[in-house]
Image 1: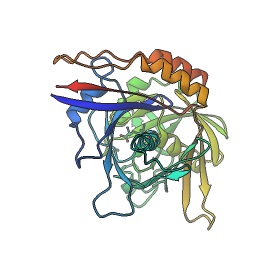
Image 2: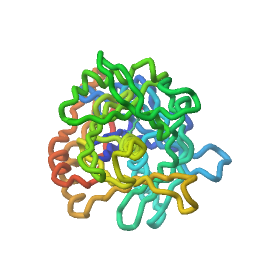
Image 3: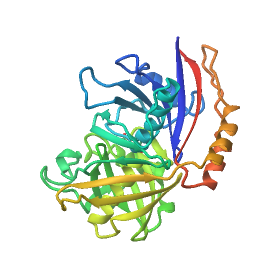
Length: 341
Ligand code: ZDP
């Protein structure tokens, strides 16, 4: 039996179990155990498990390594909301050790999609420079266009229907399709058909997007390896890129997700249009809100004692209710420890 100490964070309801894995080189739990941990009835309940590992030895350019397992045990390359949560988690861990840097501070995090630099700002914002979107079909990967071409506005047959789709990688693969009414999309029905479609050899995250205005987009997401989630940071960035390339939106827009709103900008680098950078800027908790959240959550920490591991799930309805009242709130947390079979 393994005892796992964890914290639970979420960004707009996209929730993760965070594990302090700095003392060892491999994740403390297996993908199979991560599936059990993510179970919303018999486990802690989460969209994924994120591990903070030390930087590779001798690499001075990196502060930490992030690994993540989706709730089905698969390992994605990148995770936009997850890395925001991770930055806060690291800062809290360092504060416990009395070694937290002053804000603003930028962490250099090694991921399977390269080095990502989340910045914790003094005013509380968490900004992530998401790097350049990848558009070449072979690199996404998708077979919807020839290897060296972009897969923008391509026709994909799903569930007996033709969908116009565009594909973008933000380190992890996304397929974006524009719809007239996002609420009418039968997500649980067609999401898995996109995810496992033969046009996507590494499977795919799928965003259904309604363009309300050029500066306001509404999306629902079916995530690879996690299903319907309340928010997806990489997905929100990918859909803005797709919307701009399809002439449907401004370069800066508000993206409404089921868990709240994100302000996304696809900005041109000062040197010109050669290098594109994407930033997600998230507003953060005001102090009084945080106090409320803590009070709501601290009473609900659970432990799993029995071998049969029937865990009592924290009652997140309370916190969710509060979150919906404050839709720009990005991250909150609870902590605890439990035993795994
Ligand atoms: O690429 C994938 O398999 C995703 N399920 C990873 C998680 C993405 C995430 N929701 C995000 O915000 O980017 C964490």
